[in-house]
Image 1 (cartoon, rainbow over the protein chains, first blue to last red):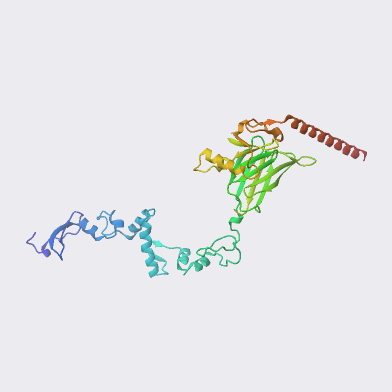
Image 2 (cartoon, chains in turn cyan, orange):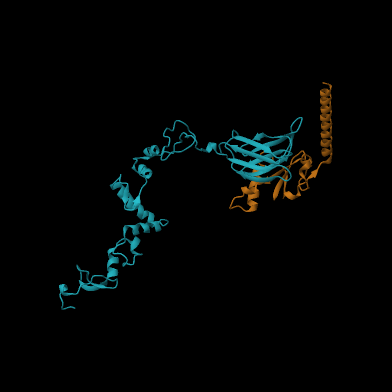
Length: 261
Length: 110
């Protein structure tokens, strides 16, 4: 073979992984002729460790873009994947800010694109439909970036509108708590006289406590808010069959409270 | 379930029933009960004697208004109070019956 010029060699039209090529190692230092398999040659040409590690060097000359994105999908829970993804994404976005398609096979929705195109947080609030005038109302939503309290848009929930504590219990027999939230205990003061002790206290005594009572009674039953403290509420349950209402243990007693904590 | 009986100076008792759901994940039962009972004792119960007992030892609730107790002793039902209340109820019922009969009689005259 050494005596034949390259144009005189028989042609190989397909190449296997173990086929050999001649290569000059360290050409600028001490040049040495060495052999290298096709597999190792192609592996060495692929510089990105993300997929080089998994690639057999045979299946394709280089992984297709789709294969790269598949790899990103597989790495989505890892640290490396998202960082690599963002690192490739951000410069491309900066280079072409309004390109909808950054990379083949990767598409941003119009909504996401609109947010990315906004110049700052204020513009993003506008895009998102967040209110922008902090002076309108001090209650409710804190908007992106500023931390300022904003007016509540309709049909939204703020901390002021959330029930902070509630309980449903049976006041007859041995007191039995059905279910509750933010309640540590019930104090039995006597017949039809109960205290609800909150786990997280209220900020003051101006919060709203309300209650209802019921059961299979042929009479009116009612809950009276007897007293309110920051850490508890005392309620009394009455039944009125005829004449004056009387303190009575009631089967279904529900109490809830709303206010600042 | 443990509960705390608080003895008031007039011999009446209050009973604190913990809410099982309020126990936190990192709390032992003892820690939880201590926290719950301490919270309930704040305010009007501060300094009053108490006993921690199982709720199964509490008397029937029918005469809850007549429960009385002293630290270290079981809760008792004051029968004198029960009789007084029963008598009062009886009088009220008789008064109601009388009023009803009078109302029916006046309607009958018409």
